[in-house]
Image 1 (cartoon, rainbow, N blue to C red):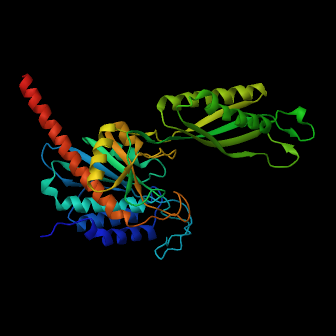
Image 2 (spheres, helix red, strand yellow):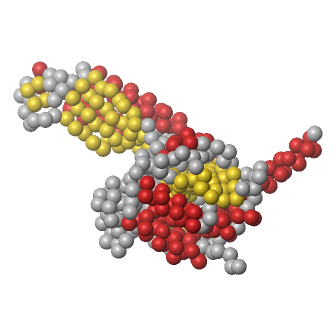
Image 3 (cartoon, one colour):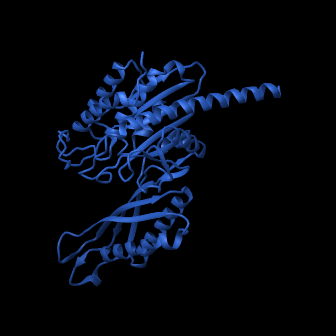
Length: 396
């Protein structure tokens, strides 16, 4: 019997991706998506493992007793965006769209599962597939970890499509590849007054303006030029009338960093600036942090292995520029070692754009890469265990 190949399932993966694209579901609402994934896995004879998840699917291929266990993750949720691609398979759900390519991720990793099922008897361990909900809310990874889905996993692998990279190109690097993404809300409390007599009050708008300006000095004066950080204020609200000075102003935004020590330092300086400037204007201010995922930090040994795997497949490997976007895959890498890569999809627009799309020729490439990486990783881990056991015997 002819073994399944990535090329032979390309049309199947395209059909899966387009079905997912037509019926996007938001974080924590992925019920139909979950049912569809379960159906495709069951049809392929792939065992599904119950971890008590309301949405999302865990499945496994392999099962060599006492062999290593690796995980491959795909996120499955969509975004609250009205699609403007004009595609014949555009979203049929108003105001919802796969504008970040999670439909591509899901179809690709389903393809990986199909390919590995064909060589199940040759695998030197087990591959666990994590079809994860709620990545856009940065909650799904934590839910899977809490369910025990990462228990016993020796290494975890994942990807994000990259519209600015050509199909056939893959970005692989050790160290940080995506940023820690924290949000903040700052509430400045003053004392309201008539706009014609500002001296009778304490203007929170003036205070907020000075705080926002002062915050811009954190990156330039508190972060080394060799490090990286972003502090962006994205929204400001105060007042209800043109002739009234409000008693409150609220602004919020985001902080992005790639190093945990820089993250802590910037947050500390942020609070110092907010408190100090507010005090100088005889007002008060409170900072509320919206804790996001930490930075995605890859293990160098898996970056090296993935490079070997990708080059053997004829892919073009590049050292990618780290993205300041956030990714809850980072939580997995806090629990075990692993790797997150960028897969070239030659899209017309960046992530979260209403006209976002991917080149579907990248589907079999992604499926084949992760199938090969999973097989290579199990072989490497099994060999390492064998060598370790021999060394232990020699010592005894």
